[in-house]
Length: 151
Image (cartoon, rainbow, N blue to C red; front, top):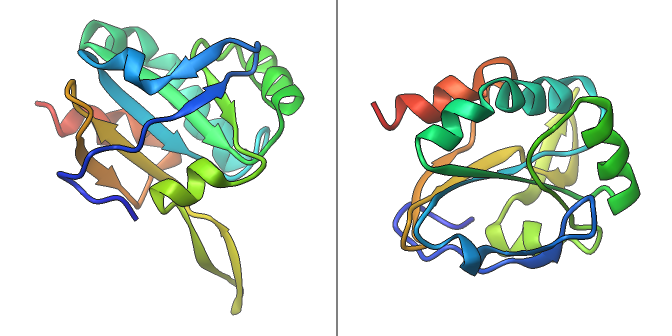
């Protein structure tokens, strides 16, 4: 997994609306890059809506928010529309971005170990370096986890 202090890998992709996303274009801004397992599931919806509800504050603090999951662009589009998500969602069906950041690995559910996306948020500074990695995401209160690091 990419660690605090490391250069964040550049992402070239498209969002739920087909708009090009190139993280090099966000140099000069702080980026909240959050990896989540699946659109329109309870935990992922709570996390996205928590970021949505606090999006204006994040913008005012100089942040850009980008979500990444293995769902396809159509799924992201429906999810963003259903919950009025104002930020880009990147489809990573190949898991290339997820694995580049190290947000893929062993998970354990009810004693069964399997490979899956590890819900993780990377806070990237204006120069493109990882300032913080949040591995224990509180889906209902993710905004406060993020903003607390800057107050």
